[in-house]
Length: 88
Ligand SMILES: [Zn+2]
Picture 1 (cartoon, rainbow, N blue to C red):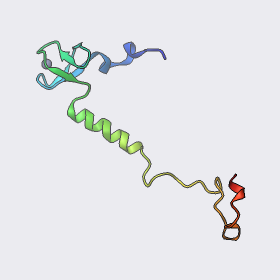
Picture 2 (cartoon, helix red, strand yellow):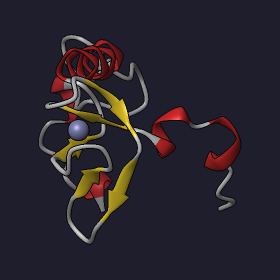
Picture 3 (cartoon, rainbow, N blue to C red):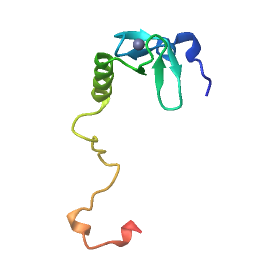
Picture 4 (cartoon, rainbow, N blue to C red):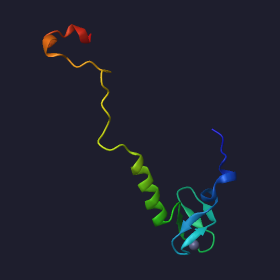
């Protein structure tokens, strides 16, 4: 996979700092990134952006579970209920 985030990713260069209350440049550490301006840990999104992001994810989920596949899997008809060899 090609990493093309350099050209089109604001979020790849900035993270949200709670203390500065804005997106800032950051220093990357192994587990955490830090604001270059105040040194606080930064987040990928601000809270409001994170909620928007999560809402977007949930909207993509289909409601009411999987749609039924009609005819894809034969249900046993009552007439052949005793015949199990068909499943082998
Ligand atoms: Zn900061």
